[in-house]
Image (cartoon, rainbow, N blue to C red; front, side, top):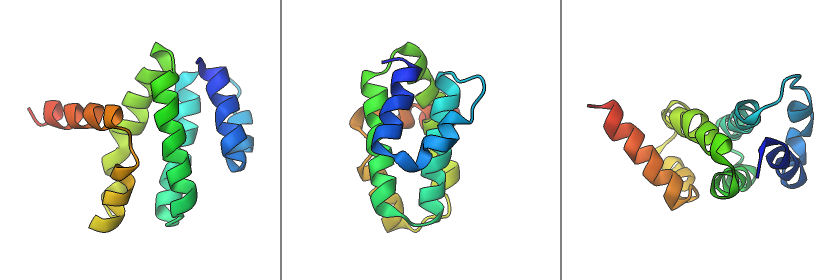
Length: 118
């Protein structure tokens, strides 16, 4: 899957994000993932669990089926920013978020955390 296919997949399953994805003049893997990441951040802030879980599952699928550029974008955009948008969540909400992140992405997250602390 490339970024154009990812954008189509996102708009099919999360129509609310359609205008944001269309608004990018120079669309690429990073802008698509950044848009979905921003959407997830907003869902966390608004405590919108149903749409949040749906969005995280879409991120998981993009990571699993995406090309190297999409995987890199997910790792360096979504995973890198997880701490910043879960920092002020209560522990139960944070667990809910991480419970829906795929095992592969959780491994990437753990690797980033442990490498960053070294």
